[in-house]
Every structure is written in C-alpha cells, then in structure tokens.
Image (cartoon, rainbow, N blue to C red; front, top):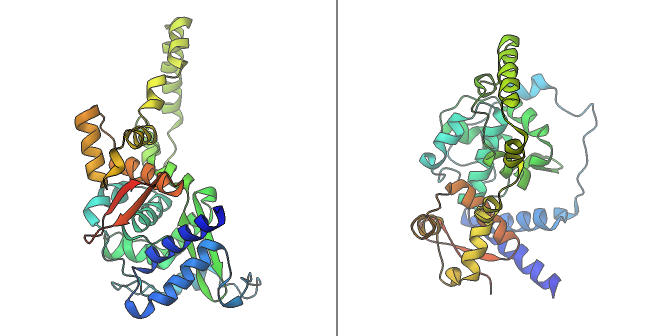
Length: 295
C-alpha cells in the first residue's frame, strides 16, 4: 500500500512539473520529471562522469554565452515568476548562492518547477530582476553549497540544481543585522572586533548568573508558535477541510491568533506538510496553490 501511495505522489508531482512545458513537450517533460523523482535513468542511459580531458575549462565555460530569452532551455516558461514577490529578497542578497537559492525556491513554489540549470537561474536574474551575474560564479557557488542543493547530472545535458530543506532553512535564517561587515560579505576590522568583544565581556560581567540562566532557558512558546506547529493546530481543528491559499492562512493567523508570520516561512512549512502527506495542494487557474487536509 505504501508503494502505491508513493507511486501516486510521484505521478502527481511529475504531472505538476510537466504543466509548465508547452503542449507538444508535455509528455517528454512528464517522463523526464518522473525519471528524476523516482531515480530511474531515462532511456536506459546511466549518467557518466566526464573524464578530466573532456571537461571544459573555466575559461571555456566563461566564454559560452547565455541566450537572453523569455523561455528557458527545455521549453519551460519562467517568465511567469512574480517579480514583486521576490524582488526584495533577491536584490537584497549579497551572495550569488543566496540569489540562486531564491530563484530555485520561487520556481518550485510558484511554478512547480523542481530544479533549474545554471543558465536558467542566470536568465531569471538578468531578465526578470535586471541583476548582472556570471554563470561561472553561480555554478561555483551551487557546487559548493553542500546539503543546501541537490545536483542531477545526465550525460550530454546541463546539471540541474534542486533546492533542499537545508537550502530552505538557509533562506529563512535571520541575517547578522548587528555586523555591517557581514552584510557586505567582508570581514570586520580588527579594531571593530576588539571593541565588540570588550563590550560583550563588560555586559556579561554585569549580569548575575540567574539572569544568564534564564536567558539560556528555551521558551516553550517559541516552538508552539512556529509555522509548522500552527499549521498542525489548524489541521487538527478542521481548518483545512476547505481549500485555503497562503494568503488565507496568513490572514487567519493574524486575525484569530495575532500571529504575524512571514509568507516565505509559511510557504516553506506548507511545502513540508505536503511532502509529509499532512496536507495536499491543487493549483488554481491564477497559478497559486490551495491547500487542504489529505484524507
């Protein structure tokens, strides 16, 4: 029974991914998506790692131009991404990796496209957000991202990068607002570091031990008010008996619970609930998703 449910989910996810392809390429897109999701090599070709003599040098990759067009390689239309929804996050990111992760997150969440090539990521950054980027820099950042991305390599095709849970967590993690040097991607000066350490030592010496212990004690309310916990509470109370959008859920939590949750954090929690079969989702005609309880 578990195998049937897994197969049903894989078919549903592959069908969602294939919807973004033109009608003439939808069948091929479904087959490729199902092969990626199930881990089965397409057309019987096992991936082969290129020999060192066959790999292009960094100079050769740099000289390869990326066409600036509205439709990405493979026929996927990425022009439907909502620029205003992610403009602040992408333009505010200082690292190539952060910008690439935001593009991967947006494509997966809004278009149902689970994985993009470096060329597609750069195309979105240039064409949609008017950010000058270089493919070698983005490729190097993604190759060094570790558990934040998953790389899918196929013979004769460009590498496809998918955002993983660690990458979603990295996007939701608060940035170091108290360190201006970190925001600019630069190390703080030695003088700034010494001054900060002196202030921290003075502050620590003036606070008695009971207060320090109280600060270290985790708050039970923080975990109870997390997006995942709030979604489980709404599910148990029957809120998802009717399909709900992200905006509906955020408005309900703000009005009924007084909880102001970032829509990006809420979207990540919803995505994980769908993956764990706690909820299911359907795409509406306007491209947004509705979430309901998985009976």
